[in-house]
Each structure stands twice: as C-alpha cells, then as structure tokens.
Image 1 (tube, helix red, strand yellow):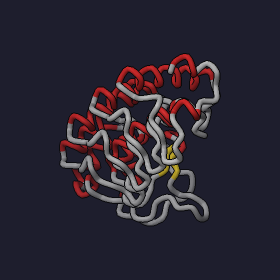
Image 2 (image 1 turned 180 degrees about the vertical axis):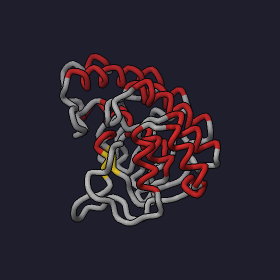
Image 3 (image 1 turned 60 degrees about the vertical axis):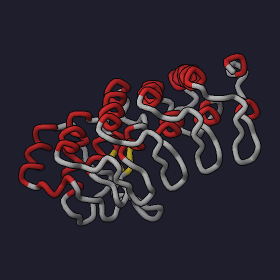
Length: 235
C-alpha cells in the first residue's frame, strides 16, 4: 500500500483511508466506509504546508494533500473513478473546498496519476454528479487551467465536453490558451510527450472557441506569449 512520504501526524482517520484510495483498493475502501461512515465527510486536519518536512505527499500519484481535503479530493487526484462514485453515492460533497479553494474536480484535472482514460472517466463522473467545471480556487484557477498546465489532452477534452469555458481567466487574467502556448513550468513540460499533448490541447481549445487575441491582466495577448515557432501556425 502506498504511504505518504513522511510519518503522518495524528488525524481523524482520513490518512489511512487515503492510503487505501491511492492504492486503488475499492473493496477495502468500501469496508472502511461501512465501519466508519464519517470518513465520507472527514477533512484533512493538518495537510501540506510551506514549512518543514511534508507528511502529506503521496508519491504514487505525485500529489499533495492539503488541509480541508476530503476523501473525494484524493480519489479524484488518484483518478479512482469507482471509489469516487462510491463516495458520491454516500453523499460526498463534489463542491468541497480545501484551504486553497480547490475542489475535487481541480484535483481530477491534474495529470499526475498518469492514466488519461481513468482521468477522463473521473472528470466525467464528477461533472455528471454536480461538480462545477468552471469552479475557481483561491487564485482564480479553474480545472481547465490545471489540465492545460499539466499537459493532459484527455482531461481538457473531458472538461470541455462537460461545459468548461475555454476562455475563462485565472487571477492573472490568463486563459487556458495563454497557458497552452507557453512553458508553464510544470514538470516534464519539455518532453516529446508533453509537446504532443500541448499540440492536441491547443487544437482542442481553438476548436472550442478559445481566442488567440484574448489578453491577460498585463495586456498580453495569447499571440504575444508564444515562444516556440511551431505553435504560431496553429493560431
């Protein structure tokens, strides 16, 4: 069973449950829920912080757990659709926000777990059961911004199909297309796989109505922030 990267602090029982979720053990997760129904609504008490060793990083899915996160947040991050649906069936809140304002759909939109089909299925599951595809976190970031930043074409396609706005702006005024045409700083963003994903994402956004002339809060249009020559003809 995957474990957090450091010893976890005392909590409300959620950490052990999350380890089961990250491992993808749906049967054990169901058993734990049967014995402890309160886990559906339990919230991470401490979570990741900017200081000191981090007890809340789950290496198997390359994802942090923050204060306020629920089991559904972490099932979404792990792209465990079956477990996510089981939690929702027991009244888990699709709109629950952690201390950073992120909802489960934000986590589902991160490409960290490395399974595009499972990621798309998890996104569709959350939206189908009431998650807002245009929800913003404390920085104004939508799930679509996160999917673009982590270079997941499957997530972008699923979010757009679920009603995500292709021209939504984050706190800096950047649209998803702004992020799609430049290096966002995400890990592995320069690999051939990431570049191919980037190409697919740009095409998906343009087909959905994204506009190359949209400007961010600094007045820069999408066209102004392009650095790679291969991108310009796409716009």
